[in-house]
Length: 167
Image (tube, rainbow, N blue to C red; front, side, top):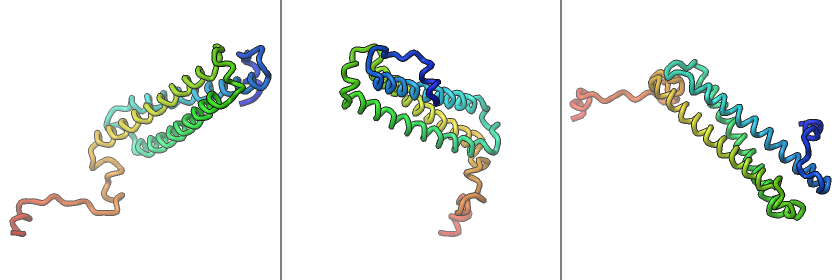
């Protein structure tokens, strides 16, 4: 993020101190950046959802697994960002005098909370989709369930003949 991108926007707090204007603009830019990221993960998840059950490629589970890890990182980053906004709002004398200002930290925090929840919901949708695809192709065909990939051999079903031999 360059300063040109931040300064190109009209700073919302025109008459306040320079430090507050810059801080608010930086926080707003982070909100904008996170918003773009969350929209991208939503679009990618929708793309995965459009794949018919049983028509996934062999790389599907691996790709979605890594994508889920990336979403988790974004969720973690948004959680930390929310904590920063909360601490600034509660503990910063600089921002307290702007509580009634239309561009206060409360608005930024609400936007950040929304993105945090959206990212969490997207991760849950992806997890459900992975489970659906894995079970939709059949347990025996799903790569994570192939006996060759497991350390333990598959359990053979017990037949009536086996039970009769034991008695």
